[in-house]
Length: 154
Image (cartoon, rainbow, N blue to C red):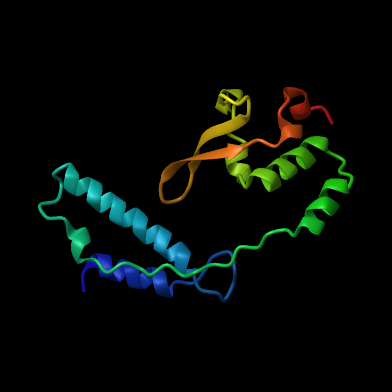
């Protein structure tokens, strides 16, 4: 067994630090293992390794995960629920309506808001996913189009 195979087995059998008594989730192990593979690929491309060892490495299979979504009733209830900090509510609703994660919303700038030929507002940004960067285009809901709605005053 190689060091890489040992690392793969370690990831699949290691205990989770945050959740006592539970093992590291398979998709988390996959993410960590893919980081290792990307590093090896880069080392090969830079000439630090003589052979591309990734071809011989058995990957960790991705496990289908369940994503929970709000129903329309839950979304309306959330919209109508008062919140002490208006910015928290606005960011939450923006995330709900666009599907963009908070971590990506927090990095948005006004330069990411584009106007199309039909005068529709669109967001263009790079989502920093664990595995790769990719561009996502999202239609901005009408009532969120104006800068005044993003006031940080509470």
